[in-house]
Length: 133
Image 1 (tube, helix red, strand yellow):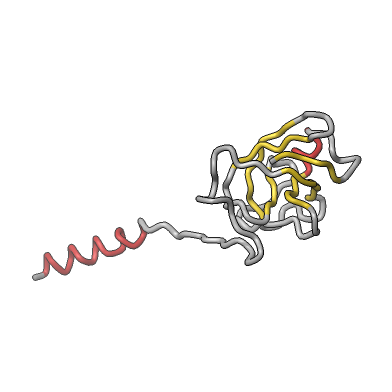
Image 2 (cartoon, rainbow, N blue to C red; image 1 turned 90 degrees about the vertical axis):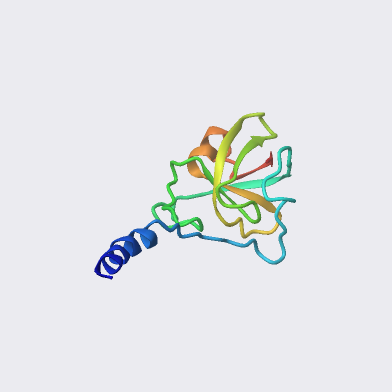
């Protein structure tokens, strides 16, 4: 009996420490994610903007700290953690970013890029550009 109790006291903390906390973020009610979450070949064309000066070092929707130097983006409906290619349709430059935040919250925009990827596709000066995601 003592051995069973001792074994239970040793195994119980180990079992509970191995669990993974899951963070589920649902899309806003007016936006539907692409069928099946991420779909190979999913394309969106629209206006992109950039953000990140005031938000630097704050927490993104994914729970990680936002960095204006990271290659990340905000999207309304793509699952957090999705990796997408964003192409500036005005100059052909493209960049690969990870969706880690929600937004943009301005009508008519499909994605917000952090400062670094926006700089790499040359959209800082214009502020917004037409892109393909």
